Length: 468
Image (cartoon, rainbow, N blue to C red; front, side, top):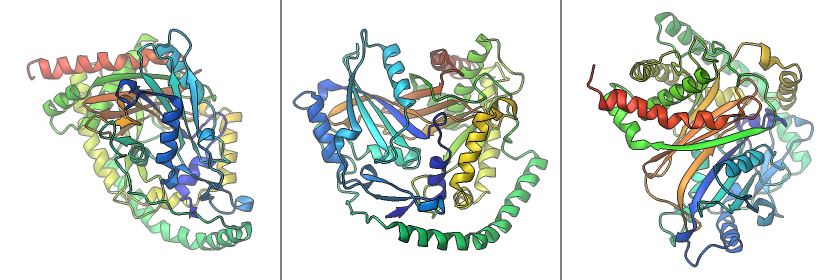
């Protein structure tokens, strides 16, 4: 039995039929590398064999009666691979349009909370001859880094080699507690919350003082609630739109090397800002002020708190108000130095500590109020979108013997921020996954196709043109 951290549990409490809190991934596979050839049954059997030793794949939720404490993970003694791995075939012609439409449909279906919170769809019938795998895993189970680590249990460095993480996670049976035990634990945890709350006041006051001081000096990160409104900033539905594209990791690095103080992530943000500028300008919707992105930041190794999600977040302006790619990346790189210093001044445990006070009824009522009263359509915009950069393998990797040609991560979208852009580098390529509320962004491919064009424009302006 493992109790969910407050941050992990908050993803359960925030979920509704419109605001789905699972993370998805689309993997494109070269089936010609599979030893002995591809068959669905053999791939499913190998998946079954590989997930059996890994607790993450066969644990399920048990809720505390009355919701007086966060749920716990327990063993699913009826685990059945057939419940989690499914087969599908695309309609003719099996191109990007058909694949993205099917993935968007799957992304809009909630996971069954009575079972381990993951599933995979093996998709055949692609015109390219590839096989696709669409995965879903609840955010209560994984963040970007732990999700990437999870893949290492299923992937290998050679087609016929054992998984990268083989033998690293011995399976331990998880005891199923009684309701009475959970209630007793919950009562004990509730009684200690006032003490924990008092202990949090002084550190939080220090954070606020530091933030106010930085704001006065002009060295604070960009402030939430200052984002301009766009067509994808409002209440969302449960329908999703998905698109994906590849861009050159080497070009990103070349740009980074030409801009003083820039990082790969700065270039990703600048390219994203340029792509969004193109998308909004083409629609006649470009706001005068810059779009604001929420950027998840891993605190793994810096925080001593338990839990699958060990993340914090910083806010950064994407400088969509600047047409010049050189000026945009220069401004983002400079402002992110301040944002990172500000973020590092905040203890890594802060978000996890406050999340312990998350209450399921309060969160559920809040989500219902936002949805039914359409508050996200009228109130201030906290941030325009989420942009994530997830580390990936620098070498070729094989999934069940099939070489991975591309891996597109797809994060959740929220009321008020109906767009998520997540990138993952793999074997010299940056894979960009874009997911949005379908009603808010019906032409999501227009945005995805802007990424290569914007990277080329930035590369030409900074790498190919003489220095200014």
